[in-house]
Length: 248
Image (cartoon, rainbow, N blue to C red):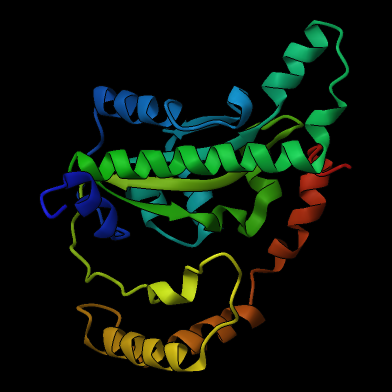
């Protein structure tokens, strides 16, 4: 297993937020999109689309929404879109009832497809020596992103992916111990001692990492994020339903 390049890649993932001033070639972008298209898809319905954002003004507006400058300075910016609009078009063209595309089951499937395809893009990018970071922060104002990208009903922006040539090598961030996330047969409640040990690991990581040092434990991070959220994120469910998702 130690010489397995794929496993090494997956177990050494780092989010990259600082990129060199170098764009991605058309061939590289095409290869990343091919990797996305080969991702597993629920019922082979391929319920996602990808938007490459290349317009400088549009990138700036998206960067303002995310609050992260690297949204506009990375080598390339993808937006992963949950997409049932294409399938609804096919159904309407055949004069077929399309109401199932709006229900909870198919809505979740579209988001799953988009998320899985996005992860394939990240993994493919890292295998090519590129770095990437997922931008869930485009949901700070989902409706504005929908408007900016001219997204029709039954589509929704799931997250962005900023990709480029890395200009940093951040420390590997420790994950929860395996026993905290993997169980045999039945779910198990969190173990206090396991969380105590992980708190110490995270506190040491933040104190010693190369940039943005701070005093913080895992529990502190979770408790903080339970209490704060960008104002318009509370509107996401409303926007989802306006887009035609989760109607039943």
